[in-house]
Length: 270
Image 1 (tube, rainbow, N blue to C red):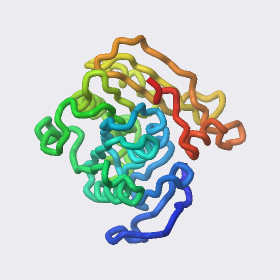
Image 2: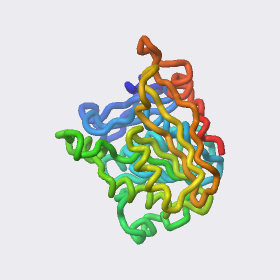
Image 3: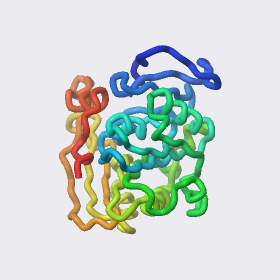
Image 4: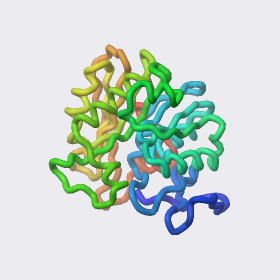
């Protein structure tokens, strides 16, 4: 997904020069997001993840590996009164996420913290994220298994996209630790990793629901959106898939409603 034209005044805060940072729109211009011109940039996945995450006003959501905050801020835009913590390891992206929260009017209920998702419990507690503090966790874990695909030469993009089984498991374990009993984890990941995800969710999660995302008609899913509840007991649920583009490569009306007009997906309803 190409970023949309930003709406509103073209303000550019100090520390984010135009040659290194672009100012892009998301959700049909509802969000304005500073992001690096090189390295990891937000796209379809972040907006789909927000649309698949259940939340109500007054809850606390934590986004792991938040980057510049696209998914978490899209969720905050949809749910007034939601408290949000954006967790990111890259200091520059943490600064951008904090700036993006403020420039979109969420500064009083959004915090961005620099933290490794694989850090020990003590580090999370010191960042005001003790065990059981979150009602919702959302995440887009790094992917593209380094054993099967060539890694990007760009270190920021490589860190965002190259993963192994240990990393995926550690992210899901961090989510389980952060969530209160009954809280939900929402994630998006390549469809060919669904078996790995389900395996890792067996440790502490249940009530797993999956929504496949298809790039083109008649083709296998390219992504899966997964929601699971901490301690849940409901049976596994497989939802009808979301089709992003029609035969001619044009966005479908259903995808456009989600990506531009902030419509939610079925996984956002518990």
